[in-house]
Image (cartoon, rainbow, N blue to C red):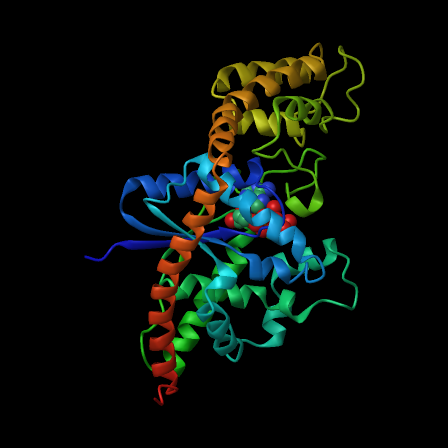
Length: 337
Ligand code: ATP
Ligand code: MG
């Protein structure tokens, strides 16, 4: 039996944060180490360009940062193929073919894209490439015939769009070339980590993240400035646990959940100050981030080796994607020569 295939990735629009870690990176490492999957992990620079066309320098710089973040969390280039999207041209060609199988009305209905368009304040000037990025994601996933896509909850509409394209393609050209993917999501509630400002999603573009590469000092400052309950002014005041981001993070990252339950009871009753609560979160996050930070620093000493890893991974990815592209062209009937 052939192995399952994983494809997932990140936009190089900045360094990766603890939302990425909990939403996707952790699951990738689990799948990678299970040995049951061929793993493709893509740095989506072409997709990042869809809303950063005039700032390619940011993408260029973030590329190596994201690669370092991968290595830091335990993605192992001996077990996972790490590739750069723009250096796999077959992905762009597949996108062109799939675009003809999708309507503009369908693209306009994508709830994640709708939210992002609002957040980014494009107004009437939404780049066409941005609107269609779910189609390019379908190309990324299907090029590797991935059946498993470890991602956060915001990606569910992209997977649905991909499955529709797969079904439409295979039906239209009467050949089972493409594979329908399934999302591999974190347990309920962990698929969308809120930002330190209380915003529903921690996001590179919203500048509300705790980054994997942040120093201990920066992590402490960010946690101390975190959103809690705006009505919890005095230590003795009863405080709200729901929507209190400090508790959301403790729920996710604190290994001692019975202690967290006690803290919640105390907070709700009154008598537990935000500073004490936040100090605990600093310790909890440091336990998670210290080993990641140390590995990152070690890999950063040899950026030549990191670049070579990207070159090797991208070469391997091109072989696989070109094979799928050949099958796609043949199914359409574009195999003239
Ligand atoms: P950008 O703001 O540039 O879109 P982003 O922070 O949304 O950046 P992406 O590169 O778009 O990050 O997402 C990469 C992966 O990380 C996706 O699988 C996405 O679901 C996941 N992810 C991103 N943010 C979060 C979050 N706050 N909680 C859980 N998963 C997340
Ligand atoms: Mg995003």
